[in-house]
Length: 294
Image (cartoon, rainbow, N blue to C red; front, side, top):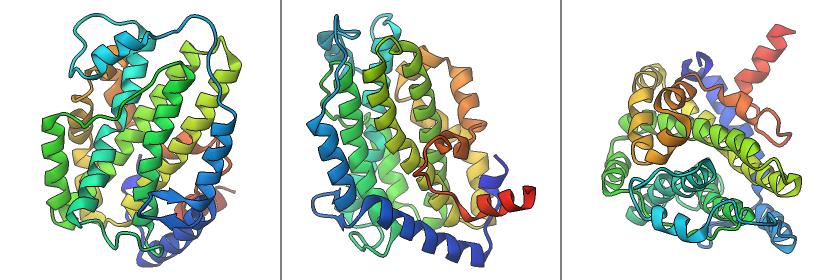
């Protein structure tokens, strides 16, 4: 991923901030920080709620088995792939949601609620991701309670939130890259597991598309906030941060294997993950590269 770790010039950073903020306003609408909602996106989800889609027939994952393992750190027995997949979906967003809520609670989130700052939109998008993941699980017949991450992950998140910006931002970039890789793997596995019912699979695709587009934008925003030393540090830390995140969700290793998962993170083509979606954000430098290639 050489492009992600190449610093932007001052002009590119200014252009990125302007274009990304305009993109967020157009895609999300007006932010309401107190309710963690957007005007445009709220209308989108209301339309989804009005036409729910569910798998039919025998459940692919039993609710009681899911509930039993959802509250455990590590599955106590060998589980089938659909159950492992559901647990990965349920646990994936715990850390990000906890981090957003913690930063808001202690007042370290920059200019909370300011519609002129992309971090306002990014924070609210993370709240929507919890809703999306709940809806994904409902498609396969499961209800999910949002739980906190492990105590070790909570400590790591709180430490990161209180770090000086120059130290915290490289870790944030690593976390966002890791999330893109994890969601990419989950979506491809869903296509393997649930292809037998095209309607419900299409709804899962529609929901995951929202997260993938958001997360790729978050990666590029985090990159735009870093200088050359910060990006070099992020590149060096990426495997370590990825292991720290995924170690708190052993289901991922059972479902995908440790080596494949780490390779997916380190070699992740972040822009390719969102390329199928027409509403994705295209960074300034990506456009420049396209023009150069032409």
